[in-house]
Amino acid sequence: MSDPEKPWDGAAVRTWLESRIAAARADQVAAERYGRERQDDCDKAAAEELVCTAVRNERVTAQQDMLVQELKGLLDRDDYVWRGVYNDDRFDRHVRTYIRKLMKSAKANEGFANIKRYQ
Image (cartoon, rainbow, N blue to C red; front, top):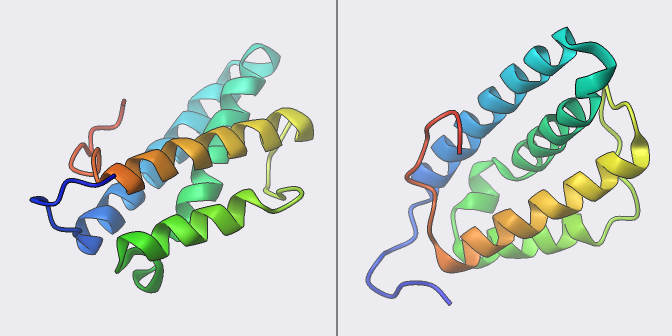
């Protein structure tokens, strides 16, 4: 599961989430400039923004298991509503994919130190 020698750092996770939100917003703007051919990229970035925004608060990120539980709850939802989405079905699929990716990182307690824009 997680690395026992690496303690959970909720502040680092929140910083990482904030950096991913900023990157997702920038990706949406870039995708919008290309029109129809990049609508899927816009939906992917919007999905990332939705998930990171939903779990970025201090209560959720304070403990590793709390973040995993919140992500599981988000995954159990039937549908997701967000602004600027082009294709609802694709968007829902992208959200679920991103939740699973983030849940895997949270369970392993890794990847939160990388705050580069492109990952």
